[in-house]
Image 1: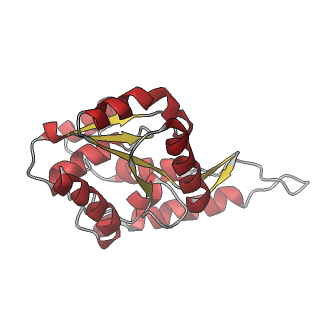
Image 2: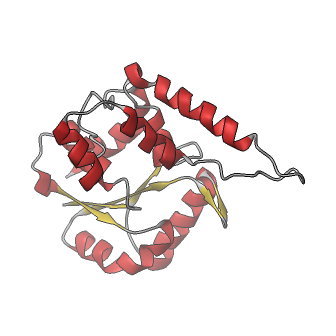
Length: 203
C-alpha cells in the first residue's frame, strides 16, 4: 500500500487527484493527515508498519515559511533530517511544485478554471486596497487576507447548483474533481503527477 502523509487540508485534493490519475482501486493508497510538518514523530509507527509490510510512504507537505523560517530548501532539509532521526523511509514532495517556495493554495491558484481566473484578479485588487490603509505611524490598519481566503472566495463566487451549494457550505467540498472549478490537466501539476505516478507504478 502507498501511505501518503499530508498536513491536512490537502487530503481532499489528493484523494480526488489520485482517482483522476489512476485506474487502481482506492485501496491501493491511504492518505493520513499529520496536522503539520512538525508532527511526523507522532506518526512514526504508521510509517514503520507500512514499510515492514512492503508498502511505500510518501510525505506531501508545504514549502512555505512560518515563525521558524522556511521555504523549499529549509523545509526539505528539516524533513529529511527528521526522517533520518526517526529512522523512517519516505519520498518527499513539497507544494507547490517541489522546487519553489509556497504552499498548497499557490498550486491551486495555478489550476483554477481559466474561465474564472478573473476572480483571482478581483481578489488581488481587494488585497491591495486592504493593505493600502495605514495607521498614522505607517503600520497596516487591517490584516491582509491570506491565500486560503482567496481560494475560498474563488469557490464561493462561482454559481452553483443547489446540491453543490449545500456540499460547499456543509461539507467544505472544494469540488476538486469538477472541471467547472479546476483544471486537473494543467501543466503546473506535472511535477506532482510524475511523483504520484512513479509511486503507483512501483506498487
